[in-house]
Length: 315
Image (cartoon, helix red, strand yellow):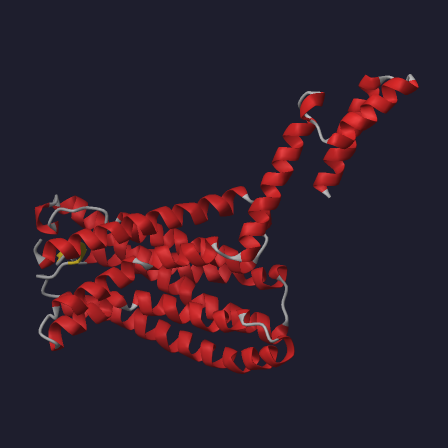
């Protein structure tokens, strides 16, 4: 198998895995109310949503030059929008973590600035991805393996500098700054709690930034290192893997798994409470038999028991 074919296959497999992981995160977030109440899980949801769009814009095996120009333009705009949204949310993440550690803010207090977060993470990317496509003809088109900023456009370097390199530079500076500020609070909390969970608060935003920087580093490596095939392949796959990494961290989180288990337990208990007596908990069967022996109306007791069970589960 040729190196290019191996790279294409590896990238395609990573994209599929990232798509699946992102869809699982979206599904869990939308179906488990307890998860949605945590602010940082909401940020993870938006990172997964942007990663989902980014993966969808890469989900084709044809050479981009063989695609319909209008389709390639649409894919390029989607890719740019998703990438800008992703680096925006991954920059917001360390800022909110630092703010939470320093000021001991609750989820509700952290969410007070959500409108500002949405403007910076969605409105700006929409503007900076769509306006250039309208203002500059054929700016988006075939770019090596994917549709993005056209590789043969006369404004390619300027467009990449403004739409790719500059946003990533700003994101890197802000992410590094907030992670550095978090460092002293993490050390302080480690001395008090001895919990290694706080170390993850530093690593996760940095890993997300490194994944996003893969697309930019790819260009520099090709320009200055003579197109080292293995390194170029690693950088391409690294960006595609962000959705997979974010999904794994989300799914394997203890709070998420406990919330999902509690939801399923409540659902099972609710179904049992509405089914026949044979499927109800042991305490119901025992109490029901006792009531029958006592001469009390069993139907009234059943309604009372089901009502109380529902109230307990709701609480």
